Length: 258
Image 1: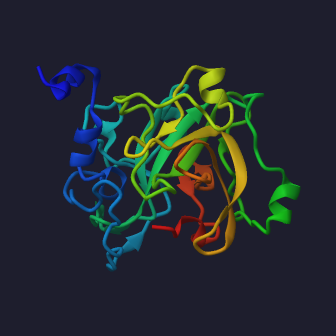
Image 2: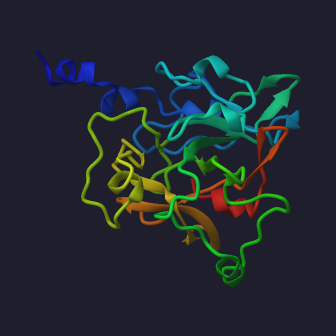
């Protein structure tokens, strides 16, 4: 039996993940496989006419997941159990109800423990000092004021722009020699956001101000707790309207590094 066959029952392997082309969040399906393989940059974004939507919509994952049946539906704050996450798209270009392949920003939506004492969030003074202005009405995470907190992250690794995952690929398992103690794992025994291509990990409970050296802008992101990434994974500011999650664009340079 080969090593690949031995790994198979444990879940998706690294080789299988790379073979998919890593286009999970960008197009919502496998219609455009081949855009990114083992760190290769995607082609320039598609320029198309249509309507840009600010609401977050689910995208189908290539392996069985709880949200796959919701492909193309709006992401609702009541959909998530604690520690559940899903892939989605934000600011996709739509013609009617049809998402144009290759448009929009891929995102990961994660419900984390409500106001976890081990978590960190930049203060208002931190944002002011960093010259960060969030869109009016939007916050760094969704908070219903009682029991639900949801974080939305840009699904492009800051290392080489691969697509990190949330509890969907664990073979090989993430390394535990963390750069800083991640409460997601140390306290709650949940794997951080994991980019299987090269091993970077990000903790959605540790939001912090970081600096994007590609275009010299400060931003808020989920702290990297394992390399080779050297900075945080950018968040998407959010708010809920009628129970549906909407993203608000801060400085677009937060997401311009691929």
